[in-house]
Length: 590
Image (cartoon, rainbow, N blue to C red):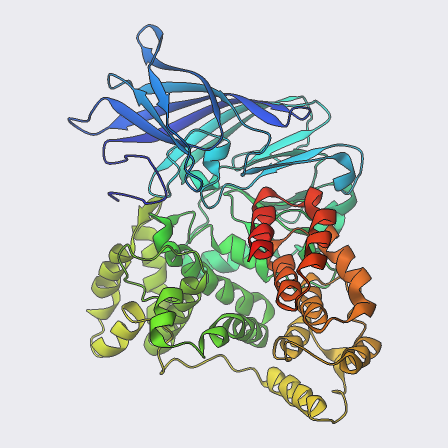
């Protein structure tokens, strides 16, 4: 990597090899304070400066290690950029260790501090981080780019009634001492730095797996995620050993802005998938898959996010198929394809190029839409079909082995693809087909979409009802995936009579299933269906996961109900992570 547009760091000159954190958690002030010590590798003939990324950090002092003691160093904190934060430039004489003393802001974009009433227990406060994409810099001065990997160790002090966990070797005992030491021996990129503190207990789900959660949630979450150890074994059989020691999940309060975050050894997960029937546990398969794709082999900048997410979604699908069956995996794939590609169908190729680029795209793509990841997954599944699993599985395993604990770009992958697959098996794919995937926008016309026999029945039932017939029968046997399909292809707006009929028959309003809820409430909002608005309000206040709440806000604004959306946001804002709040505010300002 020579440059990452999302970072001020200069890794061709100097790289962090190891990071030591010494932090104190202050729940009253809502700040972390302490120091970050960087052990550095300097390039030959490097200059005299270290540039780190920061956002809203107060830098109290910087020092460099000069045998036999530390000496103060001159530093400058640049004017802040709205997206990237401030470059911290430190003048050094090639010091091998540089220590920054600092504190975070209460408004740090990568941290959320929850009052007790916002937790399941309602007694103790809670805090957690979310460093992806470029939010690690809001709580640690760091080279905040996935192109730089480092090991780390941390000493953290906190109120003694709280348990502190990090993306590191935490053990399994909830020993609340107020002083915690953790180690992450494997090198990771900055976006996988993670910390959480709260009333947390542990429940085992296997020899290497378990769940951390508030006591009120722990046993239910452990039951929901009971198949995690089996998922690990399946993935190891397919794609090589798990190289991170333990794999545990931390179930966070519902304000967590994502479904999951693949922090190594400690996936952070939303409670919205804990509904009692394991129908949404593909999220666990996805985050576990990141232990190979993303955590082990990492994109070197956010422009190449498809390398992380495309490979991960492919491995996720293979895990789901092995553990829950082919039909379940096909339904999951069909849902994802419908949710993304169908939105592009009406667009002309020039517009699609902005949304769904080729994969070997160089540096012109910011990788923020998530659609490149879908194309990457589809591409890998297409290669699997062409070459067969007997050939393709060893190729994927070899990819993880070759680039283990490295950060790579699209060109690195393409080179490996040519050497390890295309050259040994000539003629299986044509140059034209390959270019359609790697270099051209959109999904190639020859790519087949996933087809589910069960979804065909759902589609027929929905169409019959919309054309004036009766509602589908035998829905008592439908899985969550079938209900999602039923709602996904509904018109954006339905009549109030149609909505009343659906709700009376199927009881969508008030559902505990967040995936069903966000689809239902989006239609409710777009249609102005008042009878469901009380529960819509409760949903937006109770849940902070962006995937679930943002479509509802968009539907409200799109239906001319921006004032109502603002009122709902005002009521929900205190429970939203800063990342979610910023996303909602962009919708309200549109």
